[in-house]
Amino acid sequence: MEKRVENNNLVLNSIPTDYKKEYLGEGHNAKCYLTKDGNVFKEFKYSMPCYDDIIKMSKYKSDVLVYPDSLVYLSSVDEKNLKGYLMKYIKGDTLANLKDEVNVLKYISELRKLEEECFDLSDEKIILYCLHGGNVYWTSDNELKVADTEDNEFDYEKDNGDIYRQNIIELSNTFIPPVVNETKFKDDRLGGYYLNSIFYGIMKPSFFLNEVLHAIEKEKKEKIETLGDMKSSIKLILK
Image 1 (cartoon, one colour):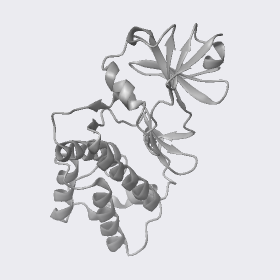
Image 2 (spheres, one colour; image 1 turned 120 degrees about the vertical axis):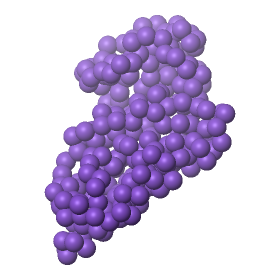
Image 3 (cartoon, rainbow, N blue to C red; image 1 turned 45 degrees about the vertical axis):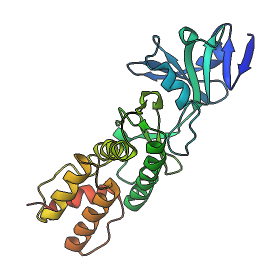
Image 4 (cartoon, rainbow, N blue to C red; image 1 turned 180 degrees about the vertical axis):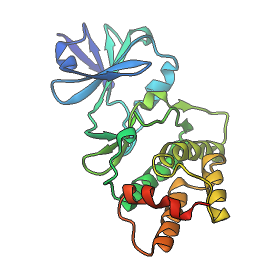
């Protein structure tokens, strides 16, 4: 296999078998494989729209959002020759399979890191799209990581505040429902906090979850340690 590196892009004559050691799964846009060296090769099923956005995304650096390490081309660096990208392998559970044993304060703390990231994203005009239980991971190191970052988009028409609020709405709709899926609270303030997070993006989801946690602990008169404890006890603060 002949390989050239151009501006951190890999240019190949063909996709090597080492890139497809183990099939991991697929979504609408791509199939994912574990590579021989322990990374992930995400192979696009067809030519991707928003090619320019993918190029820009590959240059963005983040500790939470897993962006491409290298774009993979056949023959030459050209839009029609883009076949996929290499990224770090995320070891852990998807948000859809999040274990009840996860520490609730750690979950909220990791969510705050993503919220802080939203300031940088808004400065770069990046909008988070299509976050869901299958592309957000709780790692074996008890950290949140977000994959499928090629779904994100740039929007240079919106101001930074609008982009920030849109990203907070995306986070709220992704990270609140796995923990809190009932909204008829005894305390109307919690209902207001929920709406401000989920619909308006003017309140961080970590703040809402923390307020729900405190309300449950006040009713139960004991500390809540895990997500499972929080979910099973939420009935104490519902109408």
